[in-house]
Image 1 (tube, rainbow, N blue to C red):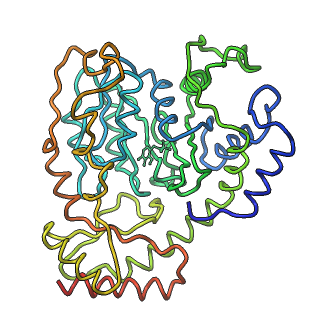
Image 2 (cartoon, rainbow, N blue to C red; image 1 turned 135 degrees about the horizontal axis):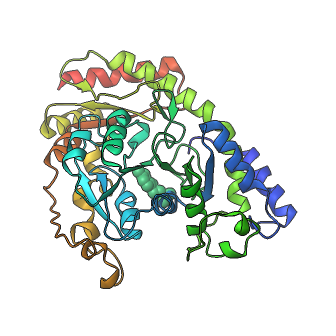
Amino acid sequence: MYLIGKEEAQAVARVIESGQLFRYRGGEGGECDRFERELCAKLGAKHSLLLTSGTSALICALVGAGVGPGDEVIVPAYTFMASPLAVLAVGAVPVIAEVDDSLLMDPRDAARKITPRTRAIMPVHMVGLPCDMAALLRLGRKGKIRIVEDACQAVGGSYKGRRLTTLGDAGAFSFNQFKIISCGEGGAVITSDRRIYERALIAHDGGCAFRRHAGTLNEPIFAGQTMRASEVLGAIMRVQLKRLDGILKRLRARKAAMTSVLCGGKGYVLAPVHDAAGDCGVLTAVQVESLARLRAVQGTLKERGLSASSPIDSGMHVYSNWEPILAQRAAHHPALNAFRLTGRRYTYTPDMCPRTTDVLSRTLFIATPFKDTLPRVKARARAFRAALESV
Ligand SMILES: Cc1ncc(COP(=O)(O)O)c(C=O)c1O
């Protein structure tokens, strides 16, 4: 979250004063409904659904797309563990594909991981960067495989002029504290497929059968969970959405200033980006030749009062740390363990995606200084360049 303030506080106060905090049973047409319409208008999508988290959004998008027990879903080896956990939550098996130098799913490795059980591919637009959607959409079309985009870290980003979450069959955003816009905890499913939307709507609300809209649905109502957003979340998100374009403009301008100084430096390269105009601009990824060199650069940066993290150190975002998945403990009860439901044996090891480990170990993230003026950003970038070139 980059900005939050008085406007959000006033929006929350308005909801509390109205006494209507529930989005249904009197809340219809209120903050959540309006947010969903406004989000659709911004993205160019037909349907969206606000709910309690990005994980809930991924689960409902997968349910919407018809993914379930016996299916496999390809996920990248570098993402928050919530992406494969959502796959397990719907009873399917996450199959892990390598990322390439862009830090995003390698379409060639994804192609190698396709089996007759592959029902969906989940491209994850990490750290605001758009995946190679042309190649991944081609794979989807060729194999009649669903594409469910995880854009939890890339709200507002785009690929070749189309907003992330609208390229595949469905997509998910997270609005937790650490995302581009936020209400503390929250998420949204986006789709232009009416059937996916209806199934997501049913999945996210155990009380769906009792709502005003129940009679308007074409899908039979199945047993759902409770992942409903409150009007408080809806009200905050309506204000946050108004801030989104300004936040992205500021991030992108600062990243452009940063990369204009960093490009062409000696001893390192900038990580390739599939669509620079659509990148949210949250950070600049710089790559060196080895982990040893990366550690040396980090040491020099520290001496100079600067810092850059490496994705290899981010723990929960690296597949080798996904303990419940490596151990194939998919659920609280063995009968619900997705790994036993496909008729195939799986082997997961901490060294199964060596290219991912290698690229993450050679990458440094320089966070975009959101609040700095452009001259200060450039001065900072010059300091980073000098440190990178001195090792
Ligand atoms: C790539 C990715 N996917 C999914 C999620 C899950 O989102 P949430 O924490 O809102 O459930 C996150 C959150 O950090 C994420 O970064």
